[in-house]
Image (cartoon, rainbow, N blue to C red; front, side, top):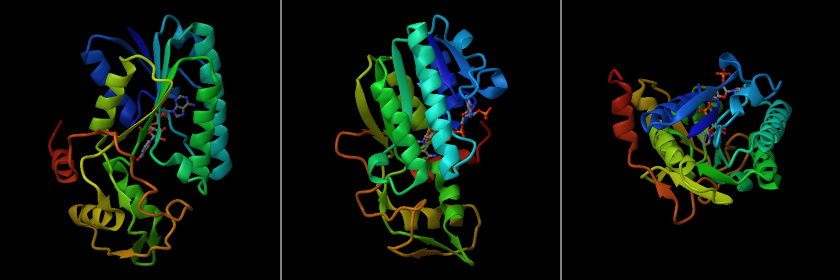
Length: 251
Ligand SMILES: NC(=O)c1ccc[n+]([C@@H]2O[C@H](COP(=O)([O-])OP(=O)(O)OC[C@H]3O[C@@H](n4cnc5c(N)ncnc54)[C@H](OP(=O)(O)O)[C@@H]3O)[C@@H](O)[C@H]2O)c1
């Protein structure tokens, strides 16, 4: 099959491109620096010619409220229009577990807008809701810096390795469209304070994580249901400690 990965040079996109290529498919890793831009439309029609499946794992260069909404709306509508014209048979998009519960945040409003465009389009689709990637723990810590400490809500989360996300997306891209959403998550349910503290320890960062139930997560108050999937989610195999040990090994 010809499969186009929008954002095919990013963290998830590059791993997905490798996984699908090794299964014998023709993969186009589409991104501005490979000549495909979903905002300007550059190279989009050419990239989609004869494609059966499109996987959208692009991300906005800016997370500022208006910029991120503009990105996902413009990118989503240009992409879906081009897919309708090209006769694409399956649109797979990566979004976030709990997007609908996190609407106090501009980023999650933008992800919901992206999902609404997909549901309204005539292209058969599967939306994949993932929990936070292990690779995102540093960004969570950075977003919660307060003086010398990191202030985070002690909410439950179930983060996942990007390799498990790419493996799930590869299977889903090669399956029939669900016309709905599937959830994926990592093998361990942990408190955000504990896993971010462990990440800081492992990376030699001496700062302490302070548990503050009122601390906002990208502008949103969290509870123990906010970030975790419902029963029936596809569960990855790579735990946090194994993932971290793998980061140190040459690939
Ligand atoms: N971080 C998390 O914990 C998490 C959890 C669940 C879901 N997600 C979702 O996962 C998705 C992928 O995340 P990621 O971390 O893999 O992203 P990433 O590493 O930042 O990669 C983003 C990709 O999008 C491309 N891109 C940017 N602007 C584009 C445009 N105008 N046209 C085409 N491609 C464009 C980038 O290309 P250039 O490098 O050339 O700009 C890059 O290939 C996101 O949609 C995010 O919402 C993330």
